[in-house]
Image (cartoon, rainbow, N blue to C red):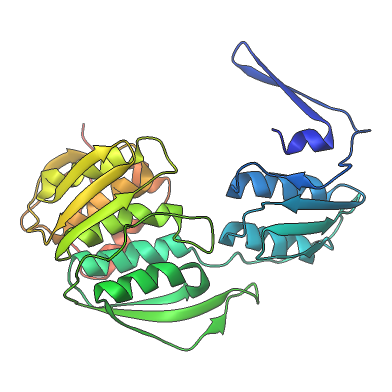
Length: 309
């Protein structure tokens, strides 16, 4: 809201509704400084700036993958964006945009990390194709320190012509806990959405790992659900857990945690456990992944979907 006020937007929340007014005479008179380097706030400021007839500077902007993809798309529409991949974006907007384009967003690094974690937790060999490596470099550096055995193919461009992709092969590895704690940072740091996967990976490694999920209130609490599958996950406070490994995973019947990535982490741990596990209310997973169970089954998993009557 504070970013969009520079473009004349005023929002009042009353009676369960948002009432929005726009004063078209208002335009940014100085650079917009975001108080938090968030992905969505940067995208909203970008979209507003793209239709502003003038030059808009956005500082403390996110440079994450979805923001870069939006910049590439806007460039195809004729909007000039300087500083893509940095924390300062200069947008040369257009009052009208009337152009047909064919654009392909790049592959999802969090989905690639999900498959990587699946291979690690189940001690499997897996080749993940079209991995956007520039958005997984910190994660891979941490995993290398932990002892991950993997190979990267040559780099090649995504369909958007800009994002760097590789084919990544992961092999069964004897992992040890990392020297430092696992904690997210804005890009180019470790991705916020990849932190939960390190709980399952750390549970598969020898030693103690501290995971500090400082961004989302109470999300770390959901990682303690892994204890029901045999992991040792101690909650230190609402943002920190201590994971002890290695783990002898065991089957269980559970409800999905109400958070997307922790829910997928539970599913991956169930794949590693002996016996049959039941995971209910998987809508949480389906809203963020397309046919995840079917694709894992194609790799050798045995996941059956069903509906309770």
